[in-house]
Amino acid sequence: MKKWIQPFRLFIQACFTAGLFLPWIHPETISGYLFWTVLAVGVFFCGWVCPFGTVQEWIGWIAKKCKLPRFKMPWKIQKYLQFSRYTFFALMFLGISFSFLNARFYFQDNLVHNMLSWTSGITLAIFLIISLFFDRPFCNYFCMKGAADGLMSIIRPISIKRDNQICVHCQLCDKACPMNVLVENTTFVRHPNCINCMKCLSICPKNCIKFNLMNFHLKKEKK
Ligand code: SF4
Ligand code: SF4
Ligand code: SF4
Image (cartoon, rainbow, N blue to C red; front, side):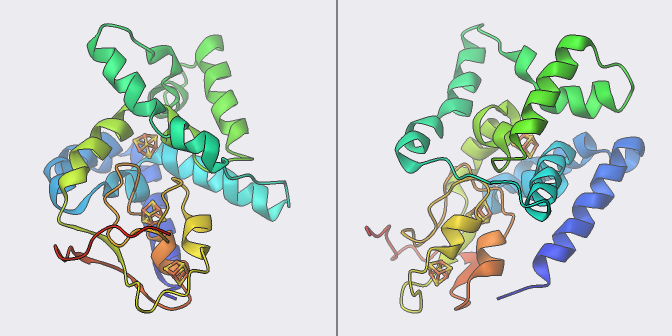
């Protein structure tokens, strides 16, 4: 287990959340810097920078500390629902906009600059309340930026890799993943939902998850 990674990530997330008030490390500026890196190493912005992703994570953490019930989306629903944010993204190109659901914008722009309307406030509150019970609901099912970056990341040659020779199939990695990626039955994670949060890597008791270059001879394995 690499226990230092999550406290380190928490520190980085806190810095970029403070960056909402500092133009030179504002998350949108960082998003621009990271744009092309997505093609090579996947989506670090969502796991390490985005303040709205961070806030959803912190609310989940508070809920755990308060011993509120936390849920994982059952796979029989998740296997369809995982496409929802990509569907919203595709519909945008057909002129069907769901921008009224853009809680990330409401948080990062309206709330921070004290310009929240009733409707945007209610939308934002709904996602934050759901975050008490489910991991990153907005990221998982609604975020169009997350969808766009995720789609760009599927060709990445560097990502999460699991060594099946050492894996004991405890599924702790699956339970830890806030984006509902099934790590335990995958050798090389190139799922567009992966946000490089490294929670799977941090929790693995056998240290069989690494972040490195794909071995093109390894194929996806079935359970
Ligand atoms: S999916 Fe959207 S809201 Fe979530 S961390 Fe990524 S950009 Fe932020
Ligand atoms: S946490 Fe590690 S040992 Fe457990 S299933 Fe995942 S990769 Fe295998
Ligand atoms: S697969 Fe691992 S790195 Fe990717 S989102 Fe899930 S826990 Fe985070």
